Image 1 (cartoon, chains in turn purple, green):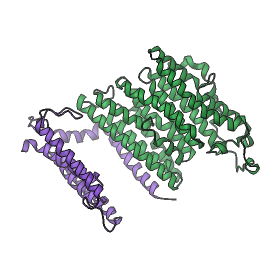
Image 2 (image 1 turned 90 degrees about the horizontal axis):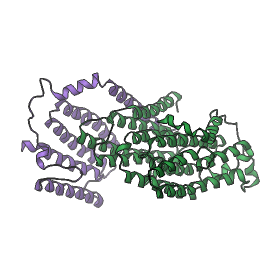
Image 3 (image 1 turned 180 degrees about the vertical axis):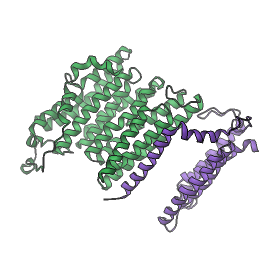
Length: 175
Length: 346
C-alpha cells in the first residue's frame, strides 16, 4: 500500500476539491480545504519535500485559512448550506464523486489511461526509492536556490504581495 | 485615489506587462500576468459605483480563468519537455490550451463576451488602458509561441472574431462598446496572420494602438460617451470633428490612411501563402466595421445630428489639453507612405 500512497492521497485530494467546488457554505468549504491541504502536504512529503509540506501546514492552513475562517465566521448566515441541504449542491457533489470513482476504476482496470495525458497504469503514481541524489536533499537545495539564483523571483513575488495589499485596501476602501 | 498609491499601482501594471514580455521562464510570465491583473483592478474601479465594480469583477473572473488555463498548459509543457523555457511548446495539447488561454485574455471569439461589458462599465481613461496596454502582454506571448500554434484553432478564432466584432458593433450607440467591438475585430485580424508572419501581427498591433489611443483621446477631450454626445462636437471644437472623421476612416481601413497598411500587408501575406478565400472573407467582414465607423462620422462630422436647441450649447468647464493628441492624429492617418519601413519590426 505504501507504494500507492500518492495515488490514494491524490484521490482524496480530488474528492475534497469536489467537496468545496460544489459550493456549500464557505465555512464547510474551508473545512474541506483543511482536509485537502493536509492531503496535499502528504503528497508533497511522499516525494521527499518535508519542508514544503511544513510550509503548507504552517502558512496555508495555519495562517491564511485561519484568517479566512474568522472572516467567514463573521459574515456567515444563520443556517449555512451543507452538502445535503440543497439539491443542487448535493447533485454536483455526487456527480463529481461519481466521475472520480469511474476514473479510479478506469485507472485500476486498464493498462493505459489516455484521458488528456497518457498514464501507464497505477504504477506511474508509485514512489520508488531512486537512490541518493547526493549528500544534500533536493528540496532544501531548491529553497536555497530561490534566495541565490532566484533573487529576481523573490523581488517580484515580494512586490506582488505588497501591491496585493495596496490593491485590496484600495478596492475595499469605498469612496 | 491617493496619488502616490495610484502611481504605484499604475507602475505595477507596467511592471507586470514588462515581466511578461521580458521573461524566458514560464513561471515568471505567469507571475507577470497575475501582477498585471491584480494591479489593474483598482484602476478599473476608479469611480465607486456598482457598474464599475461589476465590470471589474467580470474582468477579474475571466482573466483569472485564463491565467489558470495558462498555468495548466505550462505544467503540461513541463511534463512533456522537462524544462521551463519559452522557445517552443512541445505538446499539442499544451499548445491548444495555451492558445485558448491567451485568446481569453485578448478577447477573441468565443471568449469575447467580457469585452463590451467591461469596457462599457468603466471610465474612458480606464477603457483606454484596458483596450491598448492590456493587449500587449498576451500578444507578445502569442508571438513567442507562434511556431507551435495549431493553425486551425487560431484561424477559426480569428475569423469568428472579425465577424463578431463587425456584427456586434452594428447595433451600438455607446462609444465604449463600439470601441470594444472594434478591438475584438482588430484582434481577429492580428491573430489571423500570426502563424504566417508574426511581424505583421506586431505592425497591426502598433497601428491599432495608435488609432485606438487617438479615438479614445478625442472622446476624452469632448467627454462624450454616446453617439449623440459626440455629435455635438461641431459646436465645441469644430476642428476635432474633422479629425474624428479622418481617424475613424483610418480605423475602418481605408487607403490612403495608415489604417490601410496592416490590412493590405495581411491580405498580401495570406495570399502569398495560397489562401484566397480567407482574406476575401476577412476583407468583406471588415466592411461591417467600416459601416458603424461611417455611421459615427455621418452623425458627427458630415451632418448636424438632430437634437433640441438647448442641447446644442454644451457647457464645458475648461478645455482639456491633451498634449499627445496632434502627433497621434498625424501618426494614425498619414503613415501609409512609410510602409517599406516595416522591416524594422523584424
